Image (cartoon, rainbow, N blue to C red; front, side, top):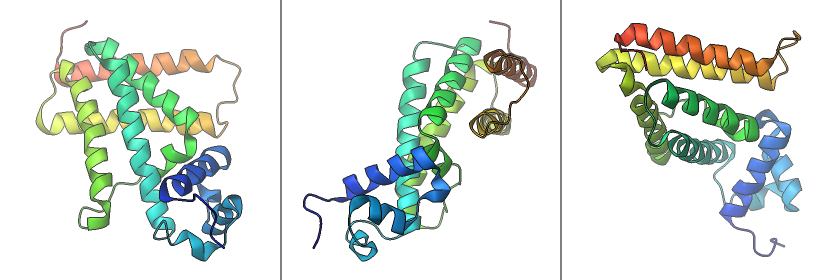
Length: 195
C-alpha cells in the first residue's frame, strides 16, 4: 500500500536528509525506501533510480549554494567578495555535506535528463566568475581562476569534513590564510590593483 501523501519532493527531501546525516555513499534506494516506510519499487513512482536521485540532490545543492553565495556577495567586490564567497561555500558544504557531495560531478552535456543540472551549475559558475571579475581576469584565465578557487575550497572542505586536520593549530585561521593566498594569487593572475 503506498504511503499517503508521498510525492517526489518528499522523497528527495528524505534522500537529502539521509545523505547529509550519513553521507552520500550510504544513500541507496533500499535505505531510502526503508526510511520512508515503503518498498523500493514504490520509489519508481517518484524517481527514476539512484542516478536520478543524485542529479536531483546536485540540482538542489547548486541552487542553494548559488543563493548563499549571491546573498553573501551582493554589493561586494575584490577580496571582500572573494572572502564572502568562500565563507558561504564552506558554510553550505558543512551544513549539507551529502548534497554538496552530489554536486561535485560535472553533468553530461549530451544527456537531456541533466538539462536542469547543467542550468543550475552554469548559474553557480557565473556567480564565481562575477566574484572573480574584480581581479581583471578574462577569457580562459577566468576559467582557470574559477577552477583554482573551486579546487582550493573543495580540498579544504573535504579535509575538514573528513577530520583530516589533526594538528592543534586553529582551523579557522588556516581557512582565512587560504583565502589570503587565493586573493594574492588571483591578483597576480589578473594584475588587479590591491583593494
